[in-house]
Image (cartoon, rainbow, N blue to C red; front, top):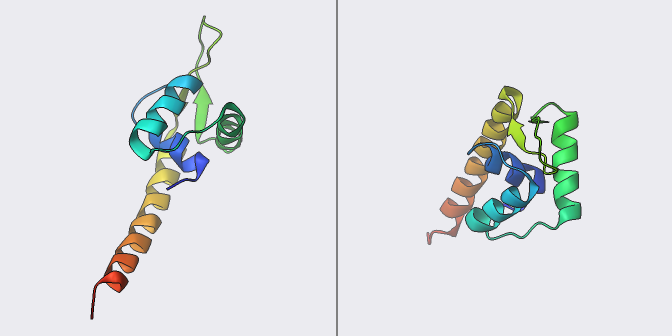
Length: 95
């Protein structure tokens, strides 16, 4: 899975994080390195759609949290992805 939006949502499903923490988390569970520009886009779109929201912080780093709508969207996308994986695995098995 390499869709930055889904990776950000998956990261935030584990708890609130600021940008650098998300980049490190995503690298640890998906092996994907998101650059700052990609991460910015991957947080802007979900924020506009109400899937994540920034948290107040006294620090210059702005943490984000996933919303209920974001969890629902992520669950729907993962169910679809699961179906694709299951289909592909069945098709890879020798007849």
